[in-house]
Length: 218
Image (cartoon, rainbow, N blue to C red; front, side, top):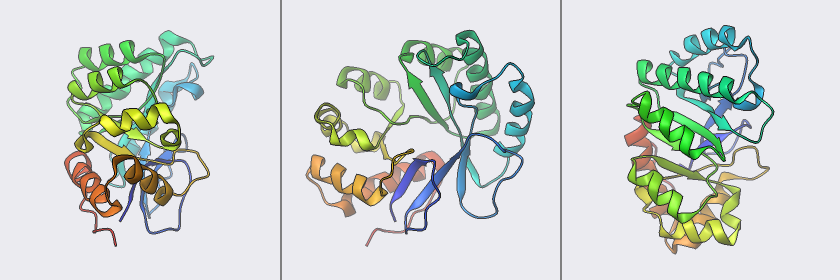
């Protein structure tokens, strides 16, 4: 079974998808698995009410991770507000023992600083990674994971992905109109390994991060 680490779409294929919830935290569906977080794009000054409902959602066993949350210096949301809300979500993740799925745009130094200041004790995954190999190695050295999606079709990202050890990698579709099987095919092509081997490696990561036991890919 192919793990889709992060998607905004429900799916009827045979993948194991973690669907991201950005709102309506009071209504967790009775089927499927989810991540839930306050995205920096959609924060408002009254976000604490949503934070309260988010905390309740995090306690649901179908919510596997906190996120996507993080920092984005290019969006219009007040940056100090972003930092405050991100810090609180790191605290929630620590308290409930749920991994973090992070959105980060031109704010990697601040994100890492807050993770260190809050002593993040849970696995941390930077989703939609498409930055440099130097930064990738820095993040991995810090113990973080990287999730790749549609950017694998870009030569620069493909070159970075080729050099990264698979024990720190996830794959995703995010909001793209793309099947997760296509992402696995592209990733296996870049790594020059079989999809079965790739799936096995990512399944080990899923076990390590989420405690998931995924069936073998066939």
